[in-house]
Structure formats: C-alpha cells, structure tokens
Image 1 (cartoon, helix red, strand yellow):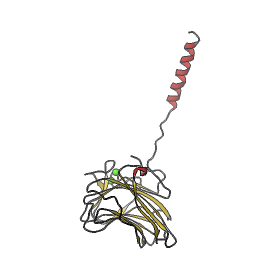
Image 2 (cartoon, helix red, strand yellow; image 1 turned 30 degrees about the vertical axis):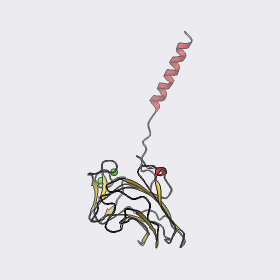
Image 3 (cartoon, protein in one colour; image 1 turned 60 degrees about the vertical axis):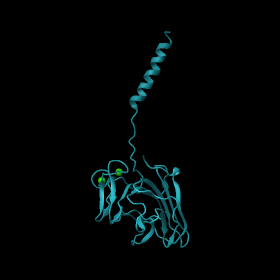
Image 4 (cartoon, helix red, strand yellow; image 1 turned 90 degrees about the horizontal axis):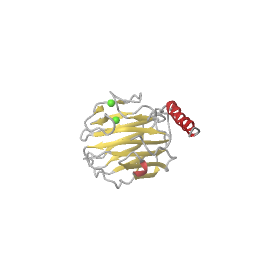
Length: 226
Ligand SMILES: [Ca+2]
Ligand SMILES: [Ca+2]
C-alpha cells in the first residue's frame, strides 16, 4: 500500500500537468482558401471586399442559410475579390431560390478571365434543373430537379482546356460533405482556354436568390465547415 499510493499520485499529477499545458488551437475555417465568404457581420467577412450593384443584400437575415447572415440577390451581379489567375478552380456555395422553376434560364454563377470574358457558367433552367456551360459547350441538364425555398450545397470544378477538352463538373447535395452529393454536370469537351480571375454571383428581379458559404480554391476540397 505504501508503495502503490505515491505511484498513483504521480500518475494523477502527470495527467493534470498535461491538461494544464493544453491550449486548444483556434482553427480559422477560411484559412488557405483563395475566396471564403460567409457574409457574417456588416457587409462581408474574412477581410474580403466584394463589389456589386443594386439588388445585393449582404446582410440578409430572413431565411439564413448558415450563421446569422446570408447574401440575398434580387438583381444584378456581385463580384468576388480578384484572384490570382488559375487554370483550375474548385468552388462551393450554398443556395436557395424562391422559384426553382423560373420563367427563363437564370445564370447564378459565372467564372471569367482577366479581360473579363466568360469562361464558364452555372444556370438554373425553367425546368428546375441545373446546367453547366464551359465556353460554347453546354452540359446536359442535370437529373436532380431543385425545389422552391430549399437549401442546397453546390460544388464545382473548372479546368481550362486547349480547345475541346475543358472540364466543368458540378455536384448537388444537401450537406457540407461532397461525398454525399450527386454529380449532376460533367462537361469534358469545354472550349474555354483561359485562367479564372473573377467569380460572379447573379440575382434576378423575379426570384429571390440566397447564397452563403462561397468558397473558391485552386485545389480540391471535399468538405466545408458545418
Ligand atoms: Ca452566413
Ligand atoms: Ca453581412
């Protein structure tokens, strides 16, 4: 007994010291991404400057997709901060639309080169399906029909080609995990040959488009913070 007790106390003291020295690391959920915007607080967060015209509300609180504020667009275009030119980009955004079967095809996301001129777009069709466009090549309308006022996670991958081999992939899901999303667009014959410099989000006067957690990077990422 006299031998065991000091031994147990030593173990206990050792664990306590380890606990005292433990400092939880603060992980910045935006660290490392070229663009990472969650629209929290007044205007934009993550020290990013986004520019847009009328019809853009970066402090939207009515039906928030994530956190306490989202982006709501009822018109116009919003431009993300300029990025270093990149021939391959991976993106993610959360999206909710008041009318998922709009009266006309609506562009919701566009990638542009330094000119700026269009490289690729993501559309909602009047049928409620998502379509991808790489240069002059349109992908087949996706098989997953969107529903009104429903929140989705979209993921995309653009790679420039040399004329007829550009890639645009789009995944549609309902969680922060791309592995559980469905690949809905797969263009492999795209005609755009340019590097991405600009990311645009679009609104329309007829529908309310709400976005959140917009991320863009040069390397693939399969999950985003919940
Ligand atoms: Ca948010
Ligand atoms: Ca805001």
